[in-house]
Image (cartoon, rainbow, N blue to C red; front, side, top):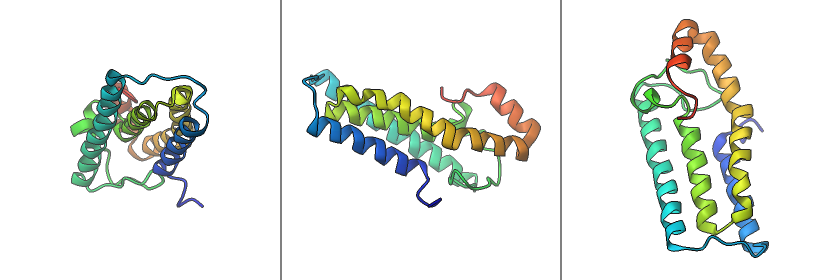
Length: 149
């Protein structure tokens, strides 16, 4: 079961919840407008670019992307100069963009719920592991770089 407890599975579950709500229970709420479509595209596109930058940096540094794995090194370069969790931030942007694209207005509440789940299930345990493994280096990283933005 631990193989399924990964952020993409959670993201997919939240996306499916939003799509299901939009498809079967729209509740008469809509943000359908060309600007909303543009914003949705920018959020999804921005999230995909952000994820690609983060994954490329992890690969360049020869360390794991798996949230339950032990990293070979603390990555502080590239996009990781701006955010300690750019992949999770990308996931939240993608989710928000898709919910807007689906016109799932009531499901926009899923975005902060997703962030909460990701923080509790992945970010906090990862940070604890990094603190133990990299001690002073991680303390500086945590002080200098925000968790999200």
